Image 1 (cartoon, helix red, strand yellow):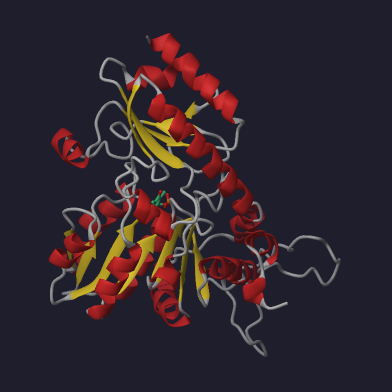
Image 2 (cartoon, protein in one colour):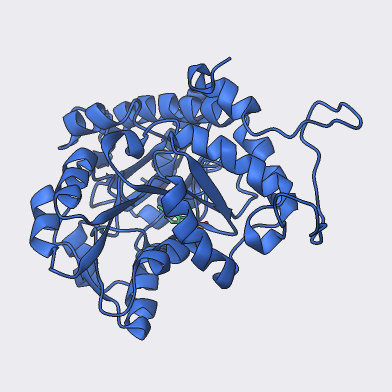
Amino acid sequence: MAKEKLGLNTICTHTGEIKDEQFKGAVSPIYMSTSYQFEDVDVKRYPRYFNTPNQEFLSKKIAALEHTEAAMIFGSGMAAVSTTFLAFLKTGDHLVVQNPLYGGTSNFIREELPKYGIEFTFTDGYQVSDFEKAIQPNTKLIHIETPSNPLMTITDIKGVAALAKSKQIITTIDNTFASPIIQNPIDLGMDIVIHSATKYMGGHSDILAGAVAASQEHITTIWNVGKNLGGSLSDFMVWMLERSMKTMALRVKAQSKNAKKLAKYLEKHPDVKHVYYPGLKSHPEHKLAKSQMNRFGGMMSFELTDNLNASNFLKALSLIKPSMSLAGVESTMLLPTLTSHALLSAEERAKLGINDGLIRFSVGIESKKDLINDIENAFSQIK
Ligand SMILES: *Cc1c(COP(=O)(O)O)cnc(C)c1O
């Protein structure tokens, strides 16, 4: 069977599995060796070279899901981001990066890139024209994130990719919030796709990992830097990630379906001022989202009416966990003002539209009626 004919669930379950020739087990064996034979072999394997059997084979699954030639697995999403940026930027180069942006990526750029003499510009907004304005003669890389955290803004992937191509600038996208099940940026012209695999790829809130997918040429460029920076993932966790990814399409579809229903329910709720979800017709980029995503994902944010306290609301929940991070099979909520965006000033937050009543909601796979009951109970307790 030709590889490109395989369906999503088949790729998730089977692509990149390692055949257990010795015992004929049903799942990939795990190879924990940090030491491999160096003579008379095709590949000199070492975990920091991203090429142990488990690393190499799981990369095939990720490449198949993102429609690329190659992929690499990292020890965290930030290892994937930082290694990729440092692979394509050197002293005197300029990076254009989207605002709003994931906090960790933003911190890496602001705190580390100046040490290397790498210049950067955060865009004023997420329209293609904002990127165009930020480009300089020494711009080498444009980085976008869509949907973004926490307001779920949607960037025109095709538009930014075309702009960058016309100026021979390489493009990277953080595809964490969508996952490869929902959005394939390579098909829209992006060069490199980055994931925090801690989120939907892992999906059970128990794996810290990252991934990058791109052409073999770009992956070789990233590998050359990655082997020096040393951000690879241990084989046990690679194996765990493979196990988790078998159910990724099932999970993400269930989370998307739940999220759409909950977004509609919250939008009609008298105690909710606004819901930010690309699947709602009221979302300003709903049409754009529909054109580049095949579902709208499990992430949303909503804002309580001014008379209600968001901290008290979170404390009043019993099923939905108030907790950091996202994309697990269990539903979680957090307050961006106290977590992801705590380091920004109140003024900077206001400019982004992030205020005290805003709650970010990572929708899990629980039964919809139980999630709604939990939310209703919380509202009645705090009023
Ligand atoms: C979590 C996250 C990251 C960073 O990933 P880690 O695995 O925590 O290092 C990067 N981008 C986005 C959008 C994220 O949500």
